[in-house]
Length: 321
Ligand SMILES: [Fe+2]
Image (tube, rainbow, N blue to C red; front, top):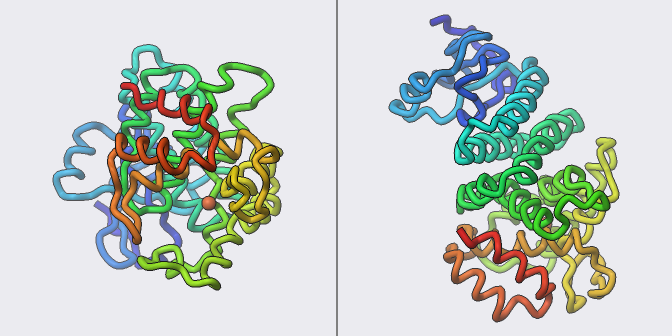
């Protein structure tokens, strides 16, 4: 093992172990973190990341490896190709496909939501687009993806899960209609909360009630997200609608524009439904999660007044395993 010299932490980027496919060689050197800002070479470029590697790491409690930041473009191109290969492989079990796609989405969402610069948004799209193909092609894998959605307080997991629920619901609603571009929709669904990176963490993680000023700041995140994506050069009509309207409500009390029900776009309604469900079934600073059954019951009984009932009927189909 070659211990690297002391380096700046920003020179390395963590990679979720689930992103390393056992049958595809690593596209760059993989490192293990061994101390404060110290990394050791774990596997050289070109070596396969075998199940034995994975097991050895799991036994020592390691959940992520690192790549050098300069290798990130190469790594995300590898991830895009690996995802495309795996999704199209008829011999790969749906569970394996779903696990790989979920890990890849979770990994890139962590990066792009903590630092939404244009190059990271580029890399996020490399991962999101082949992931959509899995939902389009494989109903069983889509059900596995829905089951994989972990319930925790992490913003990145939240955005991954909302992206998965939303694109699965859009697939049910729109099928293979050429009127709706599921890839562009997915970009909006996965990046719907990008503007939250401009909201102070103490507000996002506040366990109690938000005061008036904090609530005003939270309500700016759709506009921030719109600005970030526009500046990155990745804005589409679909993403604009989803980002700006995903907190609008049918009863006119939503934000940022208090839109009336007739003006809220169906794309934004899909995202909001997934967002509400995900919030109810995840631990948050201000509440403990409830079960899928309890969440769907609550949404049907109480929350539905400001949502689309027809859409909800389609949404519950995602949970018939
Ligand atoms: Fe939001």
